[in-house]
Length: 462
Image (cartoon, rainbow, N blue to C red; front, side, top):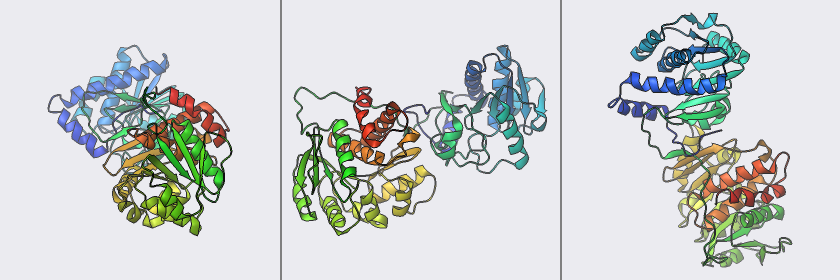
């Protein structure tokens, strides 16, 4: 679990924020606050069980010594094991404040509660083999594992696994780091607790929080609530899932544009569209607030013509599935020419085929959004939403049961509803509703069932 609405900063940004904080407080004062936050959470989870604190050579180790001292002062049975001598003055001072015995990491005996203070923010290389082996043994034997800032063995800015073990909880100091929301870092951090240690942090990157939505006003009507056009293609079931999701997500008027009548639900409007020219004519309607194209579109000439018509339209556009595959490496060139805003909803495979971006998932998604002048909702177990304006939001991808056919079509429809309603942060709202509906749906659901839980998820935001 990730704290909602929390700032996310890189290792370099965190170091800069620390240096600014040291203008108003000493490093030891900040370290005392960090250690106190760790001790407070450790005491809550320890429930009187013996505690083993692992201290590294850097300031993460200083936080560990501080936490050990404060836990001992509370009456806890605490032992400390270190991986080398302190290499900073602050860590050395906190070791002296601890005042108790410190064994070598290699001599440490397992205890029910483990506090990992070996290596935190700034780690860029794998754990040494011997350290990794002992750490794995101690962590594996513990009943509860708590990391200070980041689990040891996780690269701060990418979430790459450099020899980490899964923690039950992590106390993130001052702000989240990219590793808390990405890849193995997200998986290994466990339940993340954000601690205020007196360091002011500002960032355009944040974790997604539950949106605050409004009920329709007394003067609202079906078009003011948002008109969504969903383009139907070779596999009509996918487009119908998106259309039904848009309806469940609050859109006032949903029109399915395709060759076949949609059947149920009866509230879904159908318009016969056979060609790109016919779609272009339809999209001249100024009441249209969003167009969703891609779910089940196909990749034949008709699909290409429909996509070109949608791209040429002056309407906000959500591109998913086959539309992304048709765009391919030309995505940025096509989207740069649009006058209306665009949203892309790729999974990792689709993203890689469109954009040759390097770096972490956040860095790559942000670079692609800037190149294509769009907003990208990069789906996955670690969902990243990036805007060409530099804003980033991140969240866990939700229930693992979402890995089934059609759930991406549901997300595209939910996004269409939010865009059509001019909802701020439409992509993060849609992602939150999608993830929450999946939680409510329980195990082994199909996409049709997922849609049934969208109104309940929506009601939690009103």
